[in-house]
Picture 1 (cartoon, rainbow, N blue to C red):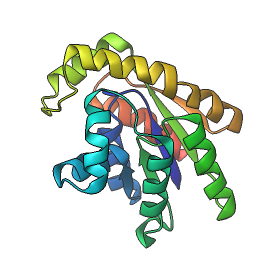
Picture 2: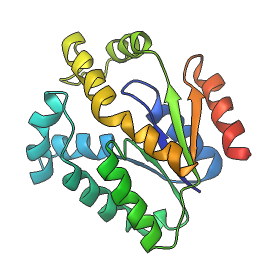
Picture 3: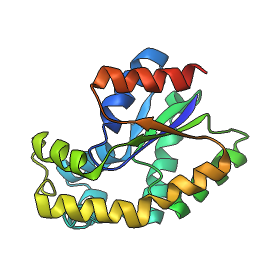
Picture 4: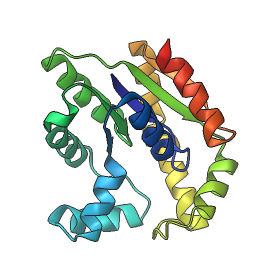
Length: 185
């Protein structure tokens, strides 16, 4: 299974991806985790993207696409994966679609966690990750960037016929039950 877990910051993508990973034995690839690791380890990529992320903006498409393509070459992703945080823009989605076609593969599901902005703000500010961009002002910028640059990806995948909306409100277990129902059909 090849799954894209999509949604705004704070929607619970990482939490739900770990549950899917465990139940279906499909590895997760989180661009956010890759970025945080690169920043923490002060790699050339980490140094390059730290200021971009601290400002609440998106990393350039080409950088993200190259990072994901390189990561997906790992044989652990051969039989499927959960993408968390990618694609974030239509050009990234198109580049990913080209990669799938080139390899004779298809996307199984594009699961979009739907959560109102007020709830996202509450979740992000209470999760205590200590990220530089977890302030009310920066969260507002991140949500604006999401709505302007990332939300159009939904329309792209609606046209592909793999889009599935998941109500992202409720307990972790309730949300996961909705995801499982979609994946099992």
